[in-house]
Length: 138
Length: 113
Ligand SMILES: Nc1ncnc2c1ncn2[C@@H]1O[C@H](COP(=O)(O)OP(=O)(O)OP(=O)(O)O)[C@@H](O)[C@H]1O
Ligand SMILES: [Mg+2]
Image 1 (cartoon, rainbow over the protein chains, first blue to last red):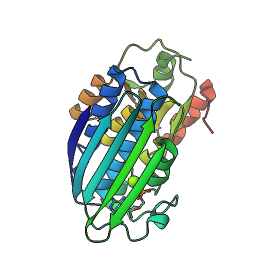
Image 2: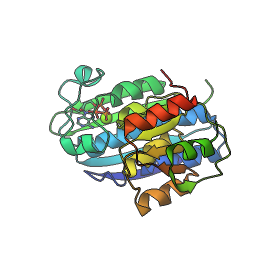
Image 3: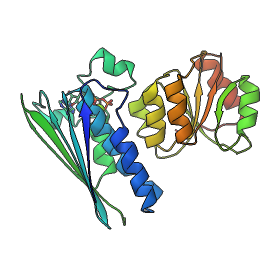
Image 4: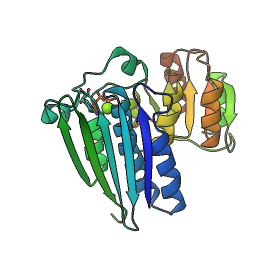
């Protein structure tokens, strides 16, 4: 099953729509609730990043019988040093982002903890792509 | 301790009672930082002063279904609509975060860490 969503820069009101819809689908498919939580937390973190740090982007989700693959691709400033960005506590979040309860530098490390495969690629001045995979039977 | 006990001890306003207030709860977590709430493995009662739509979304993603807003922060209609869709219990009280946590701790709610 393939699903696509658009996320818009600065649109915090709608941040989480994609994750929320994926949650409903996975519940209907009777995926283990613990696994569902891991999937949607990771996707939500990626969605919020595309809204907070980039100029919006696209979320695409592929659900198979045994796993889910999620790609969040944004147009944005990119990440100059991915290893640094992956460190807990590193954040360049603007004050508006902090006012929404985000910007602690915990998102990328949290994605890493929740998914079975994480791949972040980025080009400065172009954008960032976050690919994640979670297996259902773990 | 039931949600009803929490409402009584905090003199709380019940914005949404979800599936009911007779249910038992054991743990609570207090934070205004949604990034941190998203790292929780457990599903405690959330006590927070951050009152916006992302508070409700974060609860949805983290499978938390009880939130207490402190210091008279009133949830908006949009927030309540989303919370209701998710079957959440939404409470509010006038006390500070410190006092709210003190009262809940005294009643026997356990911390996660
Ligand atoms: N899509 C992106 N585009 C550009 N920069 C990004 C992107 N995602 C992350 N970053 C950079 O990496 C940093 C760390 O990201 P991470 O998600 O770990 O923390 P945060 O978003 O700052 O805070 P939190 O996730 O705790 O709310 C960000 O502050 C930002 O500098
Ligand atoms: Mg983040």
